[in-house]
Amino acid sequence: MSTTAQRDLTEISVPAPAISPAARTLRALLGTINHNWATRAGALLVVIYLLFAIFGPIFTGDPLELSTNRLLEPGSESLFGTDHLGRDMLARSADGARISLLVAVMSVLLGLILAVPAGMIAGYRGGTMIDEVIMRSVDVILALPLFVLGMFVLGLTGIGPTQVGPIEIPGAWKVVLLIALAATPFFARVARAATLVEVHEDYVDALKVVGVPRRRILFREVIVNVAPPVLVQAFLWIAIAIFAEAALSFLGLGIQPPAPTIGNILFDATAFMLLGAWWYSLFPGMVLLVATVGFNLVGDGLNDLLDPQLRQ
Image (cartoon, rainbow, N blue to C red; front, side):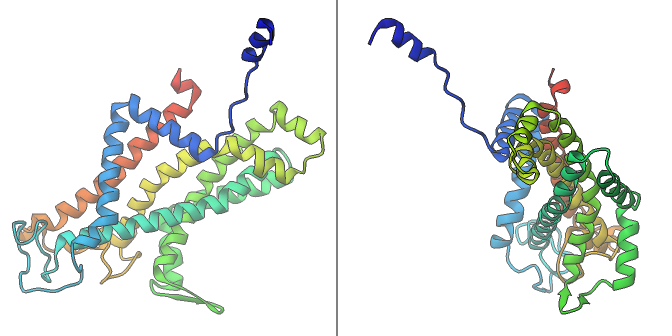
């Protein structure tokens, strides 16, 4: 082979393999952690919270076990102390963190399933009646604050299980549905805005010309570029969902005792704060603080990296 032919072969550019939205977001997340001290601190807090929520209940014992050591201060017998019924606060805080994490993740996933397709369809059909109907429906949900909506729905259906035809909805799932419904407008708006940008790109016009169906254009091609900003919003909403679950449980509208959640633990602690039981509210409050601050810092850093204007 001649030298010219070899040079021509070496100059042939090989197209880079396609990167999935999840891999792209993960790469951006790792890049953010490496270049932003606040995000590094947030990532550390998230890791601490995840380890505590996932593995804590395995090693801390039964959170419902009663004992005679009531309102025992933190020490060698109990690292986080005990509550007014003698239950170990470390075990209850770990189990409450696990429940809060499960509720947050399930509500965010459900919100994404409901909102992203609707937002993408609205963006693809921007300016039409379909767009108006979808976005005005989203605005109606957005006008209802989460706690007002929660008090209204749970006031009608009760805080226990609700029978809807042959299906029984547990009380915990009603909390998941409420938080998912509150997150839907934010996910739909982000998906619509990203889709509006993508539908004016040349590749979309080319796919239309060759006869590719709209459904495939949206959910095979456009979604690749819509997913990163939506996933950033989802990451931020995990922090909001953890706080919302704790707030609803604190108000008596969330998951009910004896199941421990951060919210109902803090509610029980209010009756004993003036008695000097400072650990009763301190440690569960620290768990909630670590989760919300950590997820918010990582989400903000990821948003900064994916935003071209902020990156410049």
